[in-house]
Length: 442
Image 1: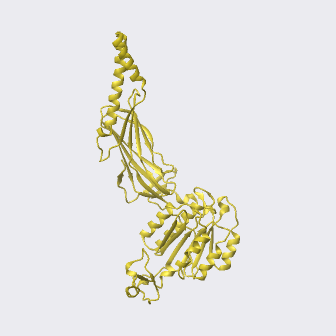
Image 2 (image 1 turned 120 degrees about the vertical axis):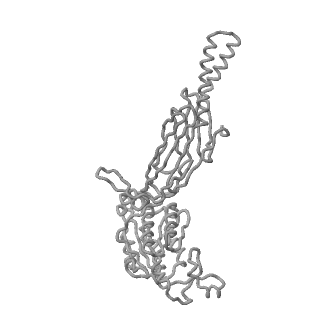
């Protein structure tokens, strides 16, 4: 049947025409045999009635199989939790037979998103509609594939059309306003001063260099030293160490508490995303280190590209088996003096503090954001770890479940959409995304 179906926009759906019951052919064959063996007018009437109904049902279903097609379009290829997702559907019937019922079956993987529906469309006509949904969970999902089911009025045949096209949709964690959390740079209290515009123009000696790493700017290369060592080296500027932020996210599944949105895992991801966004917006170079199922290592960089890289990484992370102490020990050789570390963890036992002490001796400046497991329905006491950190002079904050209340991640808080809630409770869009072009799925 697929070979006969006309192409729509370069796409041919997988088409199937199925007879719902084999009793009808058996009865028609039996009546034909009886008429040939024992001619009788009653057999002829029954034969014409059943055979004619069979023929009409087949022609009706064939018209639907050849003339019915669907166009599915979406906007954007990514969103944030709280953003609205909009799709446009167009159901066209080029055939002579009306589709009295059409069932649209959506096979998308986006949670809490339902666009399946039942409708109908007349012959030589079309029907269009829009759907809206709320992105409620971070992750990589697909919109589509899509299937259509219809049939003739006598329910003799079922026509199935399958559109295998699917589009990926990346739902990133939301960015929320943070309370007065200050990341200590270079051993000084507070977030420090923003680097001067001419900071990168300062003269440096050959001792303040390191080997080139992927992502470093080519204009930082120290050509004389690179030529001497026959390997690329980049300059380290006086203002760079204090301006770099490393965000550590503890994803050890053994210390996570809570389920879904109300979990230390999700709050840690949101906190890391929001903290990285704050640093990048202030002109700092921000990096990310976490180890769930896989190691995420993003060295500090500036700009929108780094923001997207961090958000993409945080979208896909899941808890793993690596404890925070192992992660801190593993990365020690990579840090130089005056590096700012923002450590986000629900591990209140404090066995990782000893590894943190080694980083302090190397000149790192940590700030610990301790997720209180009790507020997420778990157990444990943060006081012991807080006391250890206080003795070491480490900046520390206790993050409770109500700090990142879900109301702060309502639709469009910092995503692509911005909404105003009317007195009646209705959400009215006041700012829409820039990319409003429709992208075709099927």
